[in-house]
Length: 338
Ligand code: TXA
Ligand code: MG
Image (tube, rainbow, N blue to C red; front, side):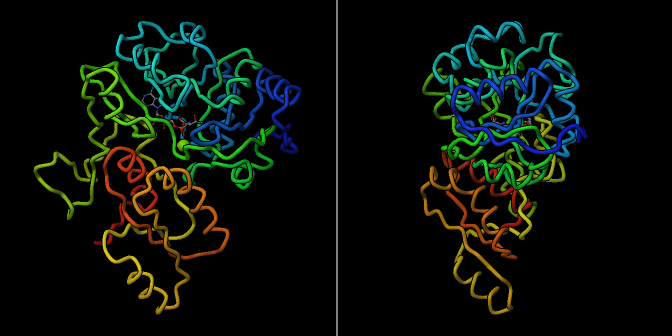
């Protein structure tokens, strides 16, 4: 990380602090900030050096594109062109909110921001602090989740500091991220509108608004070989070539080993504890909103408690459950117990 960073400034959410945070972004610095999904690590999206320092601070591979955040519809045209009708219709209904659209990038946006793709993921967050920061910075803000690469995404400012203290210029200490998993990423630039990353906004919601059935990127249906059901179109993990570059990396991993359980989770716990393994169970019942809000935060809490093995009860993969199971399976490296 840049040597000029000596200490990470803790900022509040009042006007003066947001203005200060905006200045830091304009000067090419890095500011972590709350959004409704997870905390983001923000940099001036149009400043190549600033964006490069985000990759450095996170230890993130540089072909993994960033999501660019705007605060008003009028800011869209400066960074992308030829927005398709379906994306536009969904933006009108769902922005500000937890959905990112993949659009055709304009040349002013550096390759560093888009991971050298000619498309750009853009989102307008509903969190007021996030939008106030973008407005104060007077430019679009590139922001991946504010965690070290590979770790669970942060949903509190404490979780941000756990990974990033001393590596970034400032953090805005806002409230807990209410949704708790990252935005849905929708790509309408190809022949078939496709969800590249499932999130709070589901395919069902998109169909209700537009009448259109969107596809899922094939990589989202990847399952271990022994679980493949030839009729459901799922691919093997070995064929895992996701369209969304970020999806190929190790993700959401706590220090503890994670296993997803589809059967008797208490039995799993008993057997592990009998072997002297420090074990915990995460069971959210069928409350998918609770699961989304707490899953990443719970993984971090269990790491702090030095738990060695975490059993997570599988959710029904309907609606939001599908999005959460995507995160759960990744955090477990697709290790599932039936
Ligand atoms: O909820 C969120 O989206 C959070 C908050 C901070 O807004 N941000 C976030 O960013 O999750 P990040 O960097 O952790 O995830 C960005 C992912 C990439 O890894 C990639 O999978 C996808 O979004 N993505 C971004 N731009 C893309 C593009 N042009 N084409 C395909 N996928 C893209
Ligand atoms: Mg992330």
